Amino acid sequence: MRVGYARPVFFSLRDFEMKKIFALLVALVFSVGAIYARDKVTSDVNVLPQPARTLLAKHFPKIAVNHIKIDSDVFSKDYDVVLQNGTEVSFDKDGNLKEVEAGVNTVPDGLVLKPIRQYVKSNFKGRRIVSLDVDRNSYDIELSDGLELKFDRAGNFLRIDD
Image (tube, rainbow, N blue to C red; front, side, top):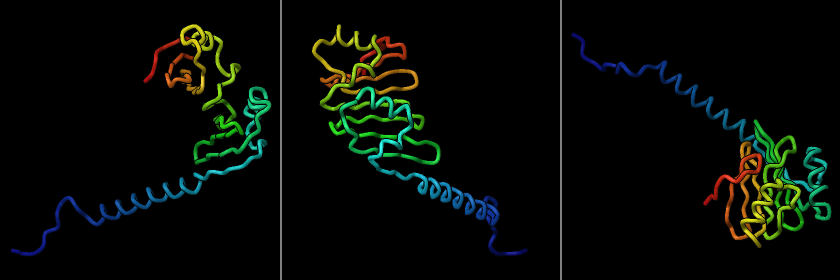
């Protein structure tokens, strides 16, 4: 009869090596992501996709660009434009509008669907639209008093968000 150390059945050198390889792969993925996840800041409007430049020229013609933050990672690229008056406008990689944060200013009427403008005008008199968030299925707006409203893509009112 042999007496000695019995190796547990659930552990083997091969399992240990596999865990090491898995940990190295995870670390490699995070390292590559960190390398590509670099923000760049510029004031050159020409870095924006053409649709974004057109939107800025049409809806903010007299307001200069303060700076543009380009947020890029492995899978996406976003542009956050800060205007001289403090308004922030965000675009996706193709130059499609994602969000407008006007702060103390008002989101230009041309960026808000007509049914949404009419709904706000008739139901929330004296309040301004200070934020517009364009999602794939909806529009979220914030009024000057902090109230948040949600609309579908056709501009139909859905609900008040808290």
